[in-house]
Length: 302
Image 1 (tube, rainbow, N blue to C red):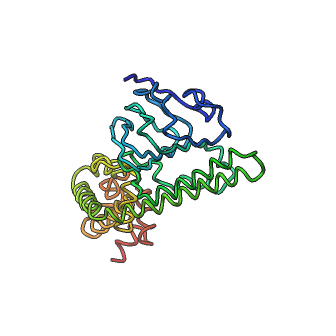
Image 2 (cartoon, rainbow, N blue to C red):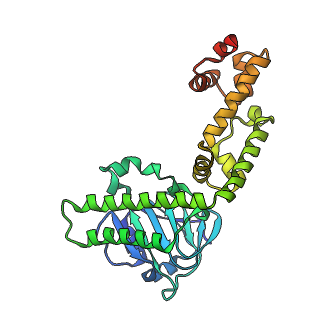
Image 3 (cartoon, one colour):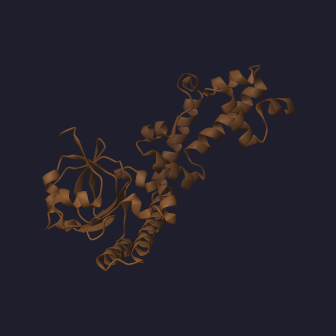
């Protein structure tokens, strides 16, 4: 497999590269997976694009996301944001494959409310192994929505076309949010194990020398330890505990800081460095944000 990465900048380039007919709209395209045999010429090639991609495949297929290989099961919805590197690892069999792929350029959303909030749909940054598994009813609902997008750009484009397309993309994303919440709920026992694992890792980190030597742990640190993407882990914790990764880290830091302020003679600066802060004023600002008091005020009052 070559290390060269092919970059796709536009819907037009995407269609040209795979030998598809000229796109009906310059910023959005819906394609039937069963008609994508030309993609087999690019098996094993790393690709990245400036496009958002949502794909539903109703038959097993292989995909390499970064360096990890995953086999999609039937009825799995996956999301890719601009800049992600993916590789198709298996050929498409037209007789066996069904599903759809939706591509859209960020420029489609620039003037819309969706353009200002699309980053809130955190599942675009989930790993492929965290894809959304759909019921038959959910699949039909999303197919109907995607069909409306395709219908719109196949008509004569008018002053309403872009708004209706964007509205249906937003509807699709909102349905996906709902379905992900359902998936989180149905996997609650598995997720509780992840919560326990995360809490154990966090406490171990906080009680070790890592705070001093490596600084405050990042979301990526814990995500790597539990083999999940950062966004998926934060969303999982939010659903199960009401707090994301940063909330858990900050709460434990504040608790540890309170203990150190009242049980040691260390200065605020010394405590801030022991807690992994590079600059004391960052610690003071965070402490006041969470407690309503500066570290010195907290120490004096208590």
